[in-house]
Image 1 (cartoon, rainbow, N blue to C red):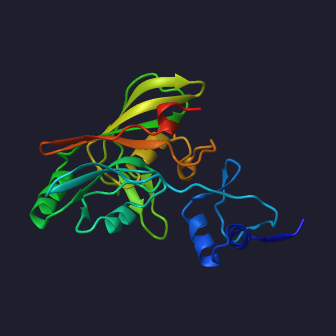
Image 2 (cartoon, rainbow, N blue to C red; image 1 turned 90 degrees about the vertical axis):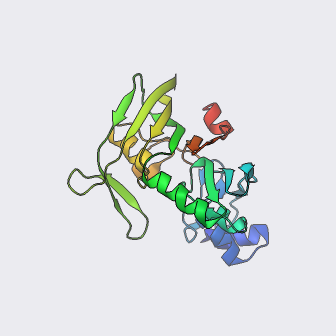
Image 3 (cartoon, one colour; image 1 turned 90 degrees about the horizontal axis):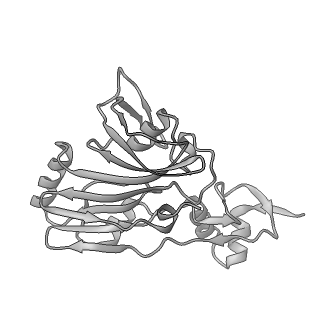
Length: 245
């Protein structure tokens, strides 16, 4: 079978430019069957049939003169949402593969006050996830986290150099050797939930970077609820999290 670089095969199949095809693969939107195509320059059969899964439309949960709350789809960068909403600035970020409540501010005074709320740990955050293994009791994790930001960000537990982090994991459902859990955090370290769960032998399903061995279209982590000042927002769980398999 003849072979060619994946992005070139995709470009020919979709009648798009090589640049556009490479960008779609790099964004994690291209699949062969249920398997994500991860390397744009990988050699692949020229008869390969690709499937592109574009992210769903961004749902605005609430907006006023101060704040916008959106339900961020998985596989969309937080900064892409900021760029798409004129005059809005991110108050925090979600990992690219994490879906759910994302908050943006609208005026400098509110943005400054809101960022202080995040820094002072006064923002209530609740997530839901599917994890590897059976979780049958509440777990509290307060191991310090160190983030290395050379190239692709990577975090690890480091008692000496790490920053304080607190994660509470509450079991909700078990299916086979997978568990659905509710997660509450008071800090917001880079990849905090992912690192803390992996450290206890329960990486998030689909999170290959931190040890998940289960194939998934994306990591099954969702920002479900967030409360700041007198505002409270909730984003409906996507189908992949509402009912696993």
